Length: 68
Image (tube, rainbow, N blue to C red; front, side):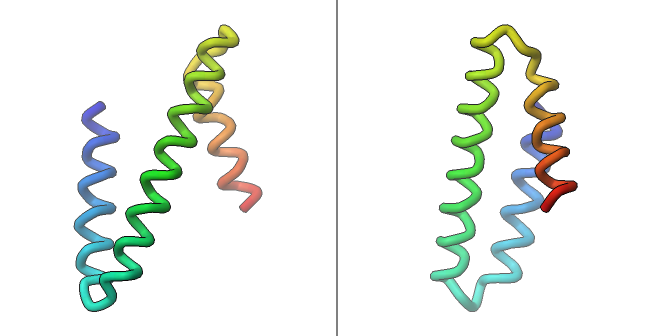
């Protein structure tokens, strides 16, 4: 929980600093970030419902990042 919260704080501070002069891009960034959070929570919920571990979702994210 703490690590996730710290990541969120760092991303918010960095994006606010980098995009302060372009508020429309800052709003878009936050919208995409929130959408990704909902998508991740949904994927984790589905994995847990199917009896898998939350670690399966982390492995899936790692694969997506490596491919991307």
